Length: 250
Length: 340
Image (cartoon, rainbow over all chains, first blue to last red):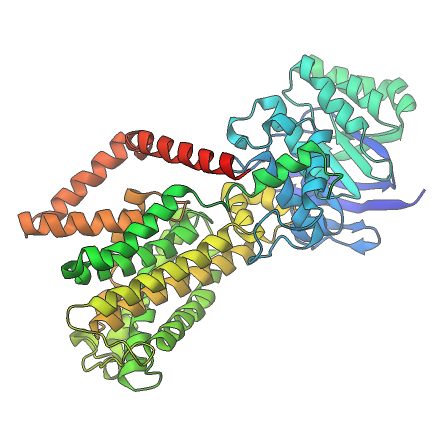
């Protein structure tokens, strides 16, 4: 297996707090890789570092052989690494249709066209429609995002990322806050992601983690605690202790 | 194209919705052009409305579409105004249309150069930076009085006929038609720009810069671009003022002018391009009417209207126009129903 994304000795300090502590981690092409760990373990910080929302204190990040440590967030997206957010980050005044259209245009490199009416590019509408159908957003595609039901917004959150045509997709708690009866829509949409896309999942719900991932990395206190195939990590008594310790403290 | 799925067909229609002309828009422009004949003795104030509308449209482009707050938009208006006046006075470019474009471009250069200062920080920072830029430019114009005429204003500007044919007459007829045509053309361009992926991405940036970056949009580059375009528009508006009055003075840079402009947009609303136009009409008519009633105290009434507007809320006031808009929508729907 080839490595598409890796970090070497990645460190992020906020003042005296070390949120990411010497993390060297590798993600393989087409992997279904979960990042788990108790609250405050530094999972989201790691995602922010990978996607360029934060600058690391030290260490390197390499995507498909390109050192992207100092690249801007939008550059990383163009190189194929796309994320979703734990708390929805959408465009309230746009419709799902416009949002997805925008993301596709951007990935095609014509998002800055200023003299072409949006939606007149050949093939674009079919491409938008495919994603809208796949995420079951057809009935609300012309509704302003701000008034969509939460479950639909959550689907859109992932659909937008897919519309960027990622090679590496980082999902930050995709099912967060979604009621049980709507969860399967999110989960089936994740399960249906193309096999050649590397998917990194941050999740608290262990059922989702074990149903989805082949490999699991466990973060504790900002550092990489252990990693391995999902079944092995599941049996690891130390991992259980970390989670149990967390719940006993709480 | 025959293998398009039903969703794709609906998507094709839905995504064009923003670009489609609403019937009320035709009404608006027919009325706007008909006042050329309907109100021939009001052309002087109508000219003021036209350049104010263009100026407000310029602010709407950055405020309503990109979310950039500015209290110093008069900077570009002023640059355009002095540029147009100086070009005419020194005979550099004597034909008004070309000179107007040049004035806009000069303002755009200043806009581009200062846009990078506007990228930093949040709303309050931007307010202060924009205010500062306008103050600096005003003092520069004051300082270089040999060029600008300083506090006395720039005297002795004579305007050549528009396109070499239409003289600026003392009743302001040609001046108004000229201003209205310029407003209309620049409005059409702005409308086209905002219906493009570029325009849509500005709305996205305004809504959520974080996610915009996360889908690959170069946020800073978009903001620089729209700020530069808006500066061009403001410069043309200022150029229109200078050309139609054959005069330019320091008050083109004044804080009052920038602040009034925000008022105009608050009255008319942002983010749909007509806000500045409608706001300019209401603002100027109100100002004119109130100034006749109480020459000294009209700002009091403007202030009162502003407070009422904000307290009652534009949404609620818009509801009063609901029947008209519903009717327009129905006519539109019928017309389309017959077409298909």
